[in-house]
Length: 626
Image 1 (cartoon, rainbow, N blue to C red):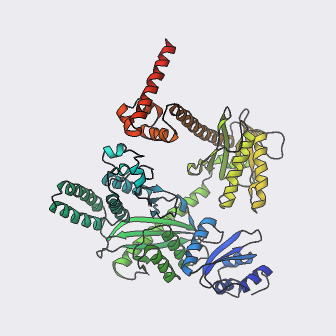
Image 2: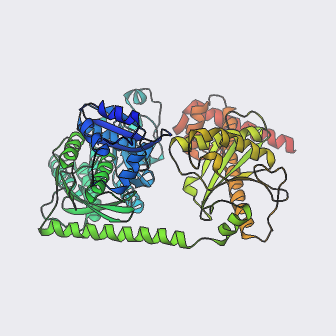
Image 3: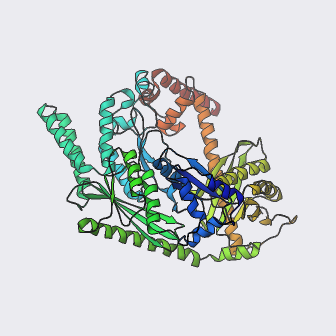
């Protein structure tokens, strides 16, 4: 090993154990540059610091920056693989291949409860629930979910239901039960084993195993008919008809009727796209695509390996055969990981001839097409830049074009329900998926300065911790005081990050009265001509932040006021108030509900108290008016 590396690096490399685990390379600012896994940590890490002429230039540059090495020892290579993938997803090191926008893709979750719920989520919680996805085609996912709700009577409420809840009759059946959209597990109308059997049928549909499910249902229908349970047989018949309509839209591709995933990758420069075809019962039931970045200098094998690892670590739908468009170095290790996760043997191979090879070519063409679309979009974003951004850069004397602008606004009313909003504009257009709202916690009463300090601290301390994208310009709604409050927090955070840290981000305050602009270090504001596109852009951003804050403030205020009115009624606490609002939509809905409707939700005595309260309230109103 050459002497260009620090004493810390040389000492740690020589002391590394010959055990499986994960290694992290860090720079002089203690930032993680790269995360990797190894069956033998000592042998693997030494390869980076010895003579290796075949090492890619990008990796050579990274290794030259390494000032420290940190390792985590695991019991097996499979554990190391899983830990590496999870750390890369959380930390997003600069030199690792990363999946783009992986958090935005939704999943269908089947919860781990006595009476499971089935819904869409963006958040994975490892509590025993089953996750299917990620779904890159959100429209088709929602169509499938609607079809499931039309055929199967799965509950849609958010309650936790178990035998104790049913026995104590804490929850009553809702409208879904009466319109035959739910079997009524909350009151024990449907048995637990029957509900569990129905959920497993839903899981088969989600997995694309509809043909197998129809065959099972036909057998159940014949048994029910033989036992003269004709009503049950008719229900199963209707279910088969609806499922058959669904399967008729799918095309048979593989006559072997197996379960397979076909995975292909296309790459160009620093971007790549992976496409996954899902074949279930011989039919294509879905297509997933994932974009990858930071792939320059990586081999096709490494890119494919990263794609396969990340995809299967985040889904519970693992077939017995995984077919790839290119070789991967750790095929046996990944197969072992998939076997451990799915409890069945998984074969990984590359199709060479026949129908499978033809389908793989189709998969490749899809990957190439999607990658081309991505590159065209990137090129258009760089070429087409709004004049307002160019002018704003010149007028504010910004060091770079403000592609990403984040704006903050505080909203309060008489010192109550103080909230803050943050809106994000990218290339002059709102990116609503990244809007954030904050309920102010520390600042008491009317204190816009303290509120601004809190929201800036919460936003950028979290952004630094998650290695998120920092803005090119920060706008705060207000004058010198709000600007100073925000600036003090950004300066305090600058020690936590190097380079373009928070203290280096340009920030301005926009005062409403004369549209004056305040900048750090200048006691006097300045103005931009009112006809300027740059001024109109920041006015639009400021107004959007104000609108977003006001809308959130109104929601909280309305919720507090409505909840208070229901709380005035004897026998209604927070829990029952929520049940009433969920059932009838608003306090007005509760007021005009019939006694029978109220009884169905809260029982006879409380329903009577509600009707008595509103009758008395109306009588008092009429007396005052007369």
